[in-house]
Image 1 (cartoon, one colour):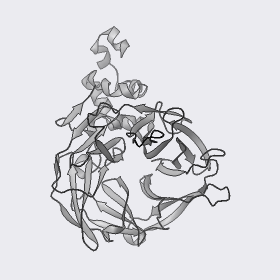
Image 2 (cartoon, rainbow, N blue to C red):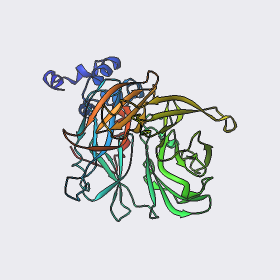
Image 3 (tube, rainbow, N blue to C red):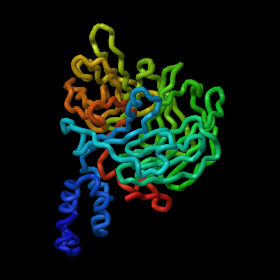
Image 4 (cartoon, helix red, strand yellow):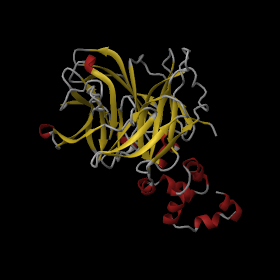
Length: 391
């Protein structure tokens, strides 16, 4: 940016072709990309273009909680960190903290969920919700829902090919509230859309399973919410794109237990289950199934990977190993253990990257991890008419 200032000629910028501008932007630090939108209309259009978004490398980011300070009952606030260099496949390094102090209600709000770089927070004891982008330091206060929610989730999938008007991509996000007004196999759901900036009227939804069976392990992709359920062990898919919240149920290949998770990779739904140590020194196994088939009648789970976790946590480390995320394009899983995030190549069955979380000597618990192109963190995911900005 300093070079452009010295030349002080916007005509030089305009004369650059789109390919050249893309190459320049790809080399900028993540903090500079958003500011570069202000250089010219051409740069703004290039940064916002899907062509550039597809070229940008994926960046690993996490939401984590440090342990409480010793000998006190004080709970540490959540922290957000992302890789200082383009993340996945880069061998690792340090996940650098992004200061959340710009959000004025950080001390009194509770983190409800996180989705692909956005955080959903709720003011304690109220129905005031906030969506926060830690990278661009922008946040929005949502209008209150009509019902007091029992469970809330954030649905944001910036890599989706679904248009913003169809329920998932293009910078549009959803907040899904389960109100707790349950029936035998269904319940009431209320959905907020950033596109309309309003909550749709609560709908009575048929889940296909008992609401008590639904877990808090939910995942959003391509305009649909996927939720794990038990008794029977299955995954419930709720369509947000259609607006009518139609649900479908698919049995799981193995009991979900406490360590089952859902994720998408290569455009397909995967189920990941992590077994614990067997007490004989083995760390356990991570198993990954992929859902094959196009029609509901032809759907079946196929075991894709089964990888032992010995060495993932480090030699002599008795910390648990937890699954965090799948790489959206290649056969790699991201596991957390002992204040680190580890990239595990599932095909080669070896660790290919390690990232430290937090400062020296800290014990941290990673609760969310994701990988999306850097430009997709930009401000188009927050509505300009409602956004609050802290520079």
